[in-house]
Image (cartoon, rainbow, N blue to C red; front, side):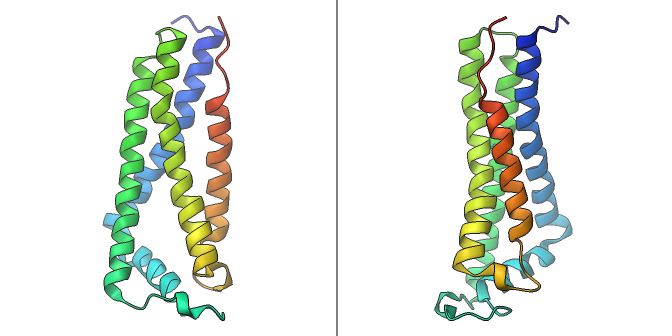
Length: 168
């Protein structure tokens, strides 16, 4: 294999997409098979705001059907993110030895992978969970620190993924 600087750059881009894709795969497996109730309890307590002191308890959802729907939607969104990542990896690997235009076109799915991961962990957990439901006030159900780290990690990986490919 002739490893040019351009090919190494492309392999790095593929690797940046592999990381959120594989992470999301493990999250899905955990949420569906191994820790369904643990993670459902997280959604339930965040949405019911039962462990926070706040004047905005009018935002509370105390309906088990809404909790289950929200949790199911989260799992579906995570699954979509994983599948988009798999498509991205397939298209990027297939375009690895092609011209710049072909590889650039394949990057679209990689961008979608990062958009979806940021929608889950930044918009979902930090914006909605953290600010709307005041998750950050909960001593026991605060997922904001890990969501912030994941959001930062995915944003950095997106930055690496986005860098222009050098001419070889």
